[in-house]
Length: 416
Image (cartoon, rainbow, N blue to C red; front, side):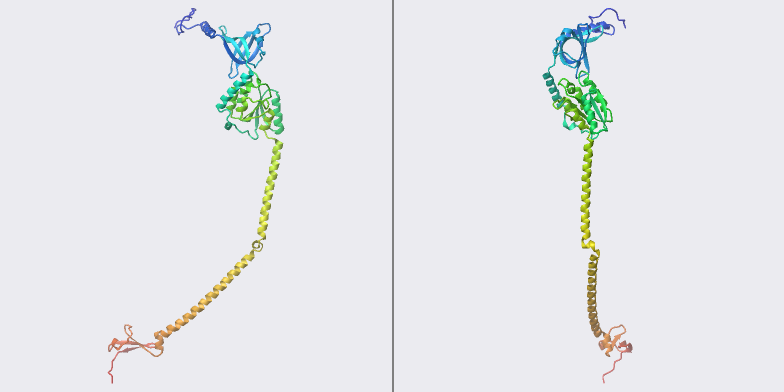
């Protein structure tokens, strides 16, 4: 590879590893490109304003409120003094300037020739457009609003240092609930550094597991003073928070975009203190009322149950339980007597019928006939002889009498 030489290959269409451009050439080309850009109109927020005594040049920084980007701006003192209203830090302006690149320092700046303030009407129109865009994205949706905890362990507070808003929130909250704990983050609430500081404090408190709710508070002010609370970056940071956020900006008529993104909007910092913590006296009174109501319910229930029990005990079946037993005993005894009578009657009837039947059977039995002097002749096989032809001479027969029997032999004799 060849070594770089002092000759400037400015005419080369592009640099190569064999013929690289020196730094001065790159700086010259960058300066040429920027010079071809010409005059531009730039909108931003004034920050770090510096008027050095004894010089005709004023130095300031023009910051983009929606991003952490800024450019140094220089202008003649006369140009600065001609600006109406006078320029102050935090003012929104439109600058007519020419970009300049300084090769020696490798820095970019703007040479301003005119400053125009951004009118409040234009700012409000831009805020309305931003409001519509954020609403279309769902940042204002009611269904994503989170409920505040009943009694937060720690309340995060983002506000100005030693401000009336800080004092109102702390004093009113502690007056309502003396044991409340605060994690206070003091930030700039207006000016060029307000939005970055508030976003940093918001992320810090949101990452703290002990913080249950975050309050962003500021007192009243002009529309320009409250512009940081309508910043798109701040609104998106609030939307991304996992911790519920309470907006307490200005007074009742003030409605920055932060009010629409926050989970709860309070009209004043004092109202925010009343919303984030309960009132100890009020809660004590509610507990007392609830206890009294509970006691009345219990006493009423006991009275009703006692009345029912007294009524049950006053009934005859409970006052003299043996009455029911005696009645059932009498009923059982009556049934027993009735069953005895029925059984005796049935036995008497059966006995009489059996006696009559026995008498008839006895009267019709062969034994009764024998008892009257008759005899029964049977062959050896037990067949009763009814006719002479049933036996032959010499057959053995039994003559059955009333008492015993006589063996006999059949013989025939002739008629005389």
